[in-house]
Length: 365
Image (cartoon, rainbow, N blue to C red; front, side, top):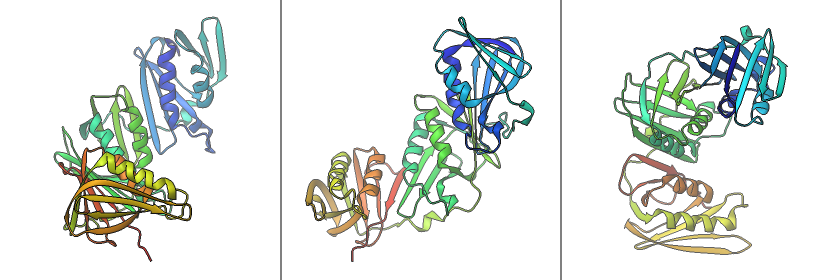
């Protein structure tokens, strides 16, 4: 292998793929980054067997080749090179990096031991606009469980229909459900994607305004974007029947300006943020929501204009759970639906119907 590429392009690509390396594995090959020089490109890839990231950059390739470089050293070194021309020269198992008058030499790993775990040449299952996918991830991610004893709930259920994708996540206290339109659909299916995979996908599409091609096979959820391939292993198992959890009828509904309500909940939560329950109480009447919190330190009362339909209601929530869904909503006005002080509330847009959040109240003794 012998090639020349731009130092900034190389550093950016290495930083992206290195997120899939595993520094705590007992298998040293998973700490490495596979690099392949061919046809005027340099392709870098890394995997921890649960995630796979591949990125391709332009390069002046004098001699084709493939090897596996020590991931941490390679990442940290090229990150400090900066811009300008960088030469990579592989002789046997020795890699030489040259930039200006400076050189770095190190031993590579055996490429024959590196796992190839995904098929990146499959036809996309569907495509979705980047901005829609970012919103899809943001609204579902907050409700993903952190409980290792229920692995299925550490993922997001993705139901792919003819013209939309529905995402659902729940952790026993909150539930998120969102629908987004898709294009170029092939087959209807449903899979559970680890939240960690969506975290990485969100980073990849952070500044993108195009479309994301999505491939689903029996084991992986894969996206192709900006000459980058990401694949995350799916979670096996049956997701909870979420439809039976979401109420269809309500006794009371409140429409409120979201930002004002969010800030009121945030301020009331300051007093109780170190308490075990982190409790705030909502008193809702005809034209007002009063958000209160109290403990031995003091008391906070925040009043927010609102429009109530149905019965007055007093209900309490964990301040963090309520604040998280209000912040994720991003709507100007939201609608909060209730069936009494012991039943879950459902928060949705006052205008659209493409998402909802369900939040369990705190039962007061």
